[in-house]
Figure: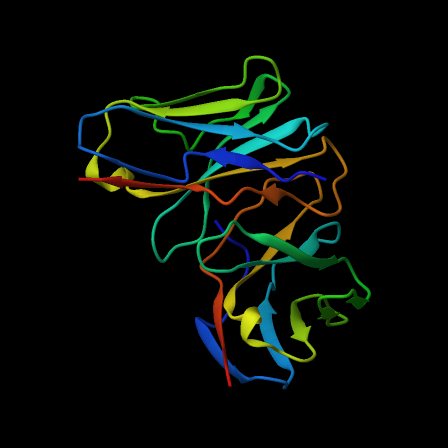
Length: 115
Length: 109
Protein backbone atom coordinates (compact mmCIF):
# COMPACT_ATOMS: atom_id res chain seq x y z
CA UNK A 1 0.00 0.00 0.00
CA UNK A 2 1.41 3.35 -1.01
CA UNK A 3 1.79 5.85 1.81
CA UNK A 4 0.74 9.49 2.06
CA UNK A 5 2.71 11.48 -0.49
CA UNK A 6 3.73 15.07 0.11
CA UNK A 7 5.67 17.58 -1.94
CA UNK A 8 7.89 19.45 -1.96
CA UNK A 9 10.09 17.94 0.72
CA UNK A 10 11.77 21.26 1.50
CA UNK A 11 10.96 24.87 0.70
CA UNK A 12 12.73 28.12 1.52
CA UNK A 13 10.96 31.42 0.86
CA UNK A 14 11.25 35.03 1.91
CA UNK A 15 8.68 36.55 4.23
CA UNK A 16 5.62 37.95 2.48
CA UNK A 17 5.99 35.44 -0.35
CA UNK A 18 3.42 32.74 -1.09
CA UNK A 19 3.89 28.99 -0.89
CA UNK A 20 1.79 25.90 -1.55
CA UNK A 21 2.10 22.33 -0.34
CA UNK A 22 0.56 19.27 -1.94
CA UNK A 23 -0.71 16.05 -0.38
CA UNK A 24 -1.95 12.81 -1.93
CA UNK A 25 -3.55 10.58 0.72
CA UNK A 26 -3.81 6.81 0.79
CA UNK A 27 -6.33 5.56 -1.73
CA UNK A 28 -9.76 5.19 -0.20
CA UNK A 29 -9.06 7.37 2.82
CA UNK A 30 -11.92 9.82 3.06
CA UNK A 31 -10.47 11.90 5.87
CA UNK A 32 -7.46 14.15 5.37
CA UNK A 33 -5.65 16.33 7.89
CA UNK A 34 -3.02 19.04 7.76
CA UNK A 35 -0.78 19.54 10.78
CA UNK A 36 1.84 22.17 11.55
CA UNK A 37 4.86 21.11 13.61
CA UNK A 38 7.13 23.81 14.95
CA UNK A 39 10.59 22.69 16.02
CA UNK A 40 10.53 21.06 19.45
CA UNK A 41 6.74 20.80 19.61
CA UNK A 42 4.18 18.15 18.82
CA UNK A 43 2.13 18.43 15.62
CA UNK A 44 -0.78 20.88 15.77
CA UNK A 45 -3.91 20.22 13.72
CA UNK A 46 -4.70 22.97 11.23
CA UNK A 47 -7.59 21.56 9.24
CA UNK A 48 -9.58 18.35 8.75
CA UNK A 49 -11.42 17.35 5.56
CA UNK A 50 -14.06 14.66 5.15
CA UNK A 51 -14.09 13.90 1.41
CA UNK A 52 -14.05 17.42 -0.09
CA UNK A 53 -15.76 19.17 2.83
CA UNK A 54 -14.12 20.94 5.77
CA UNK A 55 -14.93 19.31 9.13
CA UNK A 56 -12.73 21.45 11.39
CA UNK A 57 -10.62 24.48 10.55
CA UNK A 58 -10.78 26.18 13.93
CA UNK A 59 -6.98 26.27 14.28
CA UNK A 60 -6.28 27.49 10.75
CA UNK A 61 -5.08 31.14 10.58
CA UNK A 62 -7.54 32.03 7.87
CA UNK A 63 -6.10 35.47 7.20
CA UNK A 64 -3.11 33.85 5.55
CA UNK A 65 -3.68 30.09 5.33
CA UNK A 66 -6.07 28.32 2.98
CA UNK A 67 -6.62 24.71 2.06
CA UNK A 68 -8.72 22.85 -0.43
CA UNK A 69 -9.56 19.30 -1.42
CA UNK A 70 -11.64 19.82 -4.51
CA UNK A 71 -12.21 16.25 -5.71
CA UNK A 72 -12.04 14.56 -2.32
CA UNK A 73 -8.59 13.13 -3.03
CA UNK A 74 -5.54 15.41 -3.28
CA UNK A 75 -5.24 18.48 -1.10
CA UNK A 76 -3.32 21.74 -1.25
CA UNK A 77 -2.36 23.97 1.68
CA UNK A 78 -1.38 27.54 0.85
CA UNK A 79 0.21 30.32 2.87
CA UNK A 80 -0.09 33.87 1.56
CA UNK A 81 1.76 35.94 2.70
CA UNK A 82 4.22 33.93 4.76
CA UNK A 83 5.62 35.15 8.08
CA UNK A 84 8.78 34.13 9.86
CA UNK A 85 6.75 32.23 12.47
CA UNK A 86 5.33 29.98 9.74
CA UNK A 87 8.67 28.18 9.61
CA UNK A 88 7.71 24.60 10.47
CA UNK A 89 7.14 21.14 9.08
CA UNK A 90 3.72 20.74 7.48
CA UNK A 91 2.40 17.22 7.82
CA UNK A 92 -0.45 15.65 5.92
CA UNK A 93 -2.28 12.59 7.27
CA UNK A 94 -5.20 10.49 6.14
CA UNK A 95 -7.54 7.89 7.62
CA UNK A 96 -10.69 5.93 6.87
CA UNK A 97 -13.86 7.75 7.79
CA UNK A 98 -15.47 6.65 11.03
CA UNK A 99 -13.92 3.73 12.86
CA UNK A 100 -10.18 3.75 12.34
CA UNK A 101 -8.56 1.68 15.01
CA UNK A 102 -5.13 2.26 13.54
CA UNK A 103 -5.47 6.01 13.59
CA UNK A 104 -3.83 8.06 10.95
CA UNK A 105 -1.11 7.51 8.39
CA UNK A 106 1.23 10.47 8.06
CA UNK A 107 3.37 11.67 5.22
CA UNK A 108 6.99 12.70 5.72
CA UNK A 109 6.07 16.37 5.65
CA UNK A 110 7.25 19.55 3.95
CA UNK A 111 9.86 21.55 5.84
CA UNK A 112 9.23 25.27 5.29
CA UNK A 113 11.82 27.88 6.15
CA UNK A 114 10.77 31.53 5.94
CA UNK A 115 13.68 33.97 5.88
CA UNK B 1 -5.22 20.52 24.76
CA UNK B 2 -3.47 17.19 25.24
CA UNK B 3 -5.00 15.05 27.98
CA UNK B 4 -1.80 13.22 28.87
CA UNK B 5 1.38 13.81 30.87
CA UNK B 6 4.66 12.25 29.81
CA UNK B 7 8.28 12.68 30.92
CA UNK B 8 10.23 15.00 28.67
CA UNK B 9 13.05 12.55 28.00
CA UNK B 10 14.33 9.07 28.82
CA UNK B 11 17.41 7.01 28.07
CA UNK B 12 17.64 3.29 27.46
CA UNK B 13 20.52 0.93 26.74
CA UNK B 14 20.37 -0.98 23.50
CA UNK B 15 18.91 -4.46 23.99
CA UNK B 16 17.15 -3.53 27.20
CA UNK B 17 13.43 -2.93 27.62
CA UNK B 18 12.27 0.67 27.29
CA UNK B 19 9.31 1.48 29.53
CA UNK B 20 7.61 4.76 28.66
CA UNK B 21 4.99 5.98 31.15
CA UNK B 22 1.95 8.11 30.48
CA UNK B 23 -0.58 9.63 32.86
CA UNK B 24 -4.15 10.23 31.68
CA UNK B 25 -6.13 10.70 34.88
CA UNK B 26 -9.12 12.36 33.14
CA UNK B 27 -9.69 9.62 30.58
CA UNK B 28 -13.33 8.78 29.99
CA UNK B 29 -14.79 5.31 29.64
CA UNK B 30 -14.94 5.23 25.86
CA UNK B 31 -11.58 6.85 25.13
CA UNK B 32 -8.70 4.81 23.82
CA UNK B 33 -5.00 5.19 24.60
CA UNK B 34 -2.92 5.51 21.43
CA UNK B 35 0.83 5.59 21.06
CA UNK B 36 2.67 7.10 18.14
CA UNK B 37 6.34 7.75 17.59
CA UNK B 38 8.18 10.22 15.42
CA UNK B 39 11.65 9.45 14.19
CA UNK B 40 13.71 12.45 13.15
CA UNK B 41 12.58 14.01 9.85
CA UNK B 42 9.63 11.66 9.47
CA UNK B 43 5.91 11.89 10.15
CA UNK B 44 4.44 10.25 13.27
CA UNK B 45 4.01 6.49 13.04
CA UNK B 46 1.28 4.44 14.72
CA UNK B 47 2.56 1.96 17.31
CA UNK B 48 -0.33 0.52 19.30
CA UNK B 49 -3.61 1.37 20.98
CA UNK B 50 -5.84 -0.05 23.71
CA UNK B 51 -9.01 0.54 25.68
CA UNK B 52 -8.88 -1.55 28.85
CA UNK B 53 -6.90 -4.69 28.25
CA UNK B 54 -3.18 -4.95 27.77
CA UNK B 55 -2.19 -5.17 24.12
CA UNK B 56 0.82 -6.53 22.28
CA UNK B 57 1.88 -6.37 18.66
CA UNK B 58 5.09 -6.85 16.75
CA UNK B 59 6.36 -3.44 17.78
CA UNK B 60 5.46 -3.05 21.42
CA UNK B 61 3.27 -3.87 24.39
CA UNK B 62 0.80 -1.55 26.05
CA UNK B 63 0.00 -1.95 29.73
CA UNK B 64 -3.04 -0.02 31.00
CA UNK B 65 -3.72 0.18 34.72
CA UNK B 66 -7.00 -1.17 36.01
CA UNK B 67 -8.32 2.32 36.78
CA UNK B 68 -7.13 3.40 33.28
CA UNK B 69 -5.51 6.52 34.68
CA UNK B 70 -2.08 5.61 33.41
CA UNK B 71 -0.36 3.35 30.94
CA UNK B 72 3.11 2.17 29.94
CA UNK B 73 4.46 1.50 26.49
CA UNK B 74 7.07 -1.24 26.50
CA UNK B 75 9.62 -1.74 23.76
CA UNK B 76 10.97 -5.15 24.81
CA UNK B 77 14.41 -4.98 23.20
CA UNK B 78 15.24 -1.41 22.29
CA UNK B 79 17.51 -0.78 19.31
CA UNK B 80 19.20 2.39 18.13
CA UNK B 81 16.43 2.73 15.52
CA UNK B 82 13.92 3.16 18.34
CA UNK B 83 15.41 6.55 19.18
CA UNK B 84 12.45 8.88 18.61
CA UNK B 85 9.81 11.06 20.25
CA UNK B 86 6.96 8.95 21.63
CA UNK B 87 3.49 10.44 21.94
CA UNK B 88 0.76 9.08 24.20
CA UNK B 89 -2.68 10.26 23.04
CA UNK B 90 -6.11 9.73 24.56
CA UNK B 91 -9.05 9.93 22.18
CA UNK B 92 -12.37 8.52 21.19
CA UNK B 93 -11.72 6.51 18.05
CA UNK B 94 -13.38 9.03 15.75
CA UNK B 95 -11.80 12.10 17.35
CA UNK B 96 -8.89 14.09 16.04
CA UNK B 97 -5.37 13.24 17.14
CA UNK B 98 -4.18 15.94 19.55
CA UNK B 99 -0.44 15.73 20.23
CA UNK B 100 1.39 16.86 23.34
CA UNK B 101 5.14 17.29 23.49
CA UNK B 102 5.86 13.57 23.98
CA UNK B 103 8.85 11.74 25.47
CA UNK B 104 12.16 11.89 23.69
CA UNK B 105 13.67 8.39 23.98
CA UNK B 106 17.39 8.08 23.41
CA UNK B 107 18.69 4.54 22.95
CA UNK B 108 22.43 4.32 23.49
CA UNK B 109 24.89 1.55 22.55
